[in-house]
Amino acid sequence: MPETVDSSVTLTQFTDPMCTWCWGSEPVLRRLRTVYGDQLRLEFVLGGLVEDFDAFYDAGNDIAEPSDVGPHWREASEQHGMPVETAIFETNPARSTYPASIAFAAARLQDRERAHRYLRLLREAYATQARNVNERAEQVALAEQVGLDVAAFTGALDDGTARAAFEDDLARTRNAGVRAFPTYRIEGAEETFQLAGFQSFDALADRLEAAADGLEQSSPPTIRAFVADHGPVATQEVATVYDLARGKARQALQSLTDEDALRREQRGNGYFWHAVAGGASQR
Image 1 (spheres, helix red, strand yellow):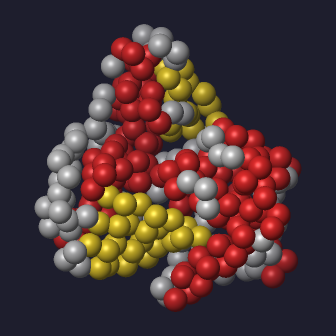
Image 2 (cartoon, rainbow, N blue to C red; image 1 turned 60 degrees about the vertical axis):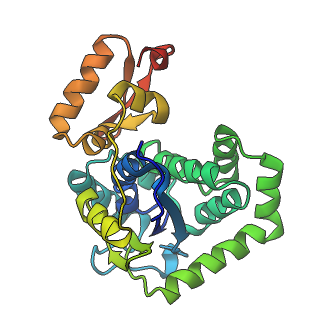
Image 3 (tube, rainbow, N blue to C red; image 1 turned 120 degrees about the vertical axis):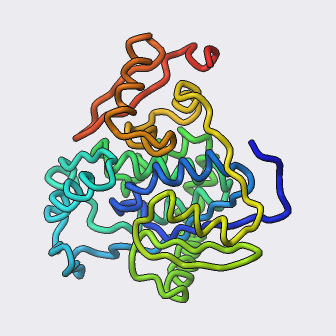
């Protein structure tokens, strides 16, 4: 990890927990946080992708109903590389992205880092496990998983404070002129940038380093340590963090699986990799 420098930079992602391109950006965010560490402050602002499917139409992707989303997700997955499970659009689709967004806002009222983990789990559960994270039971289960105070979490959902925080985010999104998710705002001592749409690691790193003179990248840990710290992780996340072709990343992960250091789980059209108990002590 590089030493702390005077220059620091904030990366804000305008986002939605059910947006497939935001899900597809997880590998890039993993790498940014891995190589920049405490030099980078990451924030999420909720944009409210779909308030109500009864009044929604995405002309660019010809999406009017939840059942239209599955083909779009599969096509996007081929590009961004993150697994998707589209069965939920036939079994229990969300009619709005607002309840899941408000749940993240409730988590963020408690603890920033736990809220970031919570957002990751919201994305992962909906995108790859066919879990409708608009449902209170799912939201509470994920809150427990990341160690939130569940009583405070549900209280914020029930008393309107989480909704008010979400509304503040919607206002920030409008004021920033955001029209696509994800959109990134980079603010450093030298420059401020705003980039719309999915961005590669290199595109964001170039702007981050232009915005904050002196920003330094460190090397990632071993793949085994990375999975132990962040798992389960998708193949594409390892490919991005270690700058590998997806096939090479899968080969490296499979080698660790053959050594009983990891286990593999198929979800939808891809794989996730879990650390095996005791693996973290063998870094």
